[in-house]
Image (cartoon, rainbow, N blue to C red; front, top):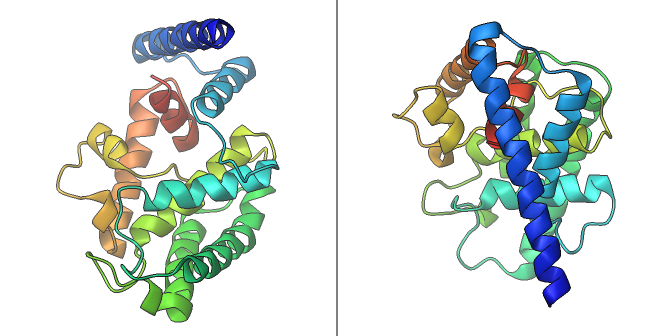
Length: 229
């Protein structure tokens, strides 16, 4: 018990020092426009990964990315029908995993446009609803929304990038309340998001914020830096 407490304290101190370093980096960058080097980016990735405990049933980096993607997408976000059985939920999640793998494959090896990304989000939503809409009658909608699909694909790609399975940065970060608030968007609830025009407005705001406000030169780096503060 004492050893666990010491290890936890050491980990907390290390993360605190990393957070302070990132905070100073951002503060300096607003004046001097400092750009992260490879070592700083590596530390950012490690800090993100160390902040989460991998799902118990996840073994490989891909397993961790897939499980984390679904868990994050549905957390505090009405998704499943109330009377869904465990077998039905597992069937849906397996299909969702396959959607992430198939649609996400091209992002792991080459940079994709934001238009391709949006098309994949819409395609995933429509595909899941076509097969499982009766499993997805929730308190917000009769089907899955852009909200869950953008969160799951973005988190999946972020984990694959941070675990160095992919060397290609994701085209967009996961959208949530914190990201929206940093972009000055307060009239949209990310959990309700299912309108393409609103999604495009968010993408533009995130792109502008990442380009003009931090030491980072991409959306993925900006969100990673912001997440670790």
